[in-house]
Length: 270
Image (cartoon, rainbow, N blue to C red; front, side):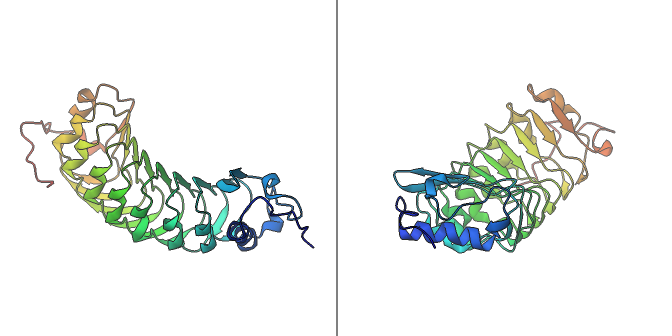
């Protein structure tokens, strides 16, 4: 039987949200489980501020099951990190109602289905890391509404369709990684407006056409990985145009033959 003071420091709604997570992910078998007879502020991975749950960090903790929609009741939550577990099922659309979220890290699980089209509601989000799952469908255009985003990492999923041009709205973006998906189309020339970008990783997809001239404007780039696509032309010059580049990877076919120079390349990506 739960003691009377177990949840004294949090609201009834927040109690229910935490218990829903515990029950839907086989909490009794977690590596570091919760003693439900102890106060919430003693529970592993839970951070409280002013009697509100502001962070849940349960990576590498043997969570197995679905992410419950009740987490939307944690209205002050800033960080949700459930990475490196065995979570499955779809991302509940209710997660996009947690407007306080700054970090959403669910990588290295078995999450399937589409990224909710309402993902753009998370206006304070700085890091969206969903890589190494089984996500499918297209990347929602609303992703471009996450104007505070610094890291967008969606690699190693089954995402399809084109890169949303709205990504060019993310002026604070430092990392954009979508390698190992089923994405196609050309790289939007407007990506050259991502002046803070340090990593651009597009390898192992079905992108094609010419790379936009504007990539040479990304002077902060340290990593540019473009191999295993269908890009046309020799872009070996790019490495010399990027002053901070450390990791640079193109298909062999894109480093041979006549160089595609800035003056010669037609702007066919708009």
